[in-house]
Amino acid sequence: MKRVLAVLLLILLTLQVTSCIQLKPEYRAEEPNDGTAHDGTETLAPADALDAVFPSWSDVEKNAKLFLTATENPIVDATDAAYSYTDMATDLQILANAYPTHLSYRSIGKSVAGRDIYLAVLGNPDAPRQIVVSAGIHAREYMTPLLVMKQIEYILAYRNDGACNGFSYASILEKYCFYIVPMSNPDGIMLSQEGLSSLSDTELCDKIFSIYYADFAAGITNAGNVNEYLKYWKANAAGTDLNRNFDALWEEYDRIFRPSCQNYKGPSAASEPETQALVTLTESLNNIQAVLCIHSQGEVLYWDCGQNAALSEATRAFTAMIAARNGYYIVDEQNNDASYSDWCALEKGLIAVTVETGTGSCPLPIEQFETIWSDNFDLLLLSAVYFE
Ligand SMILES: [Zn+2]
Image 1 (cartoon, helix red, strand yellow):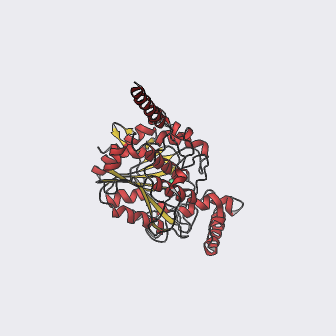
Image 2 (cartoon, protein in one colour):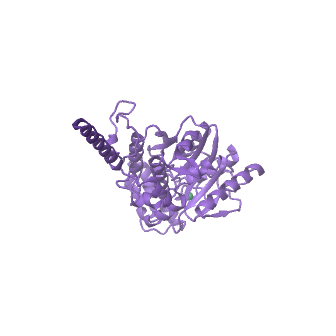
Image 3 (spheres, rainbow, N blue to C red):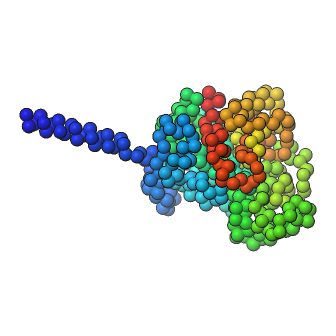
């Protein structure tokens, strides 16, 4: 009898321990790697991310805002609008260490000031289909890198239990690979956030000063000092608007013919290293389903750049899917400005849409992030599922 009681006690204890384990807040990261980069140098310890606890999927499915408000110790901090280049680089490292099976990142080039242009590769790199996302190509629109980095964290957090229109995140991440450039214009973003102190190259600083004086003289700005002026900067560190620098009707674009805070198309098509990085990336992928160009602001969607009839129809239909989700207004007028989306559509025959997030004027205040998040948190996943 004593033996039977002892066995019963043991079973009860085992059940208790098991249920305790289940009740314990679960850290959802994958088996982390050993914190050592391929070159042998020590990277951030994966343990740095180990205290992140996310709300349960069923709650988040009902209310995505919970992911912002109820996430304990988030990796991507969405409480400060000035999401910096260093923040992004650090977060990519932490996320890639925590979720090595689903996320890697690498540099696809150097900016004018020598910063790495990072590419996040989310999903199965051998997947048959690809979605490309470019954010942060316009400097003062730096809420867009924050948005896509938060989207990456969100997808990774729910990679095992999330679902989108009946497709599990796991199956989406197996069949699709997302190639995401969160900060296509890192120098410009840091100029907008921190002013001239973000540049160490005195020659580049002198050049920015001369652009400021020229823009002031032309009435393009009335800012009383260079750092106030730089807050509203859109271009790269050479004064070229990267989204006017692509080789798609570039000759025709004629807004301004010298370096400026915005709209200068550069000395030649694809003259800038940041432009070349996006061109090389796009040309290296063999089955891109769609390209999302994330900008701010206006809550509108641009898609028409004079594509051929078949592509035009496909792009308009894809854009309508996005509008049905985020409620943004579809601009049905043809627009050409030598942009990345123009180049993707006209030169590469790809579905490409420009998503203008937020309202008001840039840089957007952090108070806008919650709405932008609610409208767009699942944009990447929906873009993939659309092609199923
Ligand atoms: Zn823009």
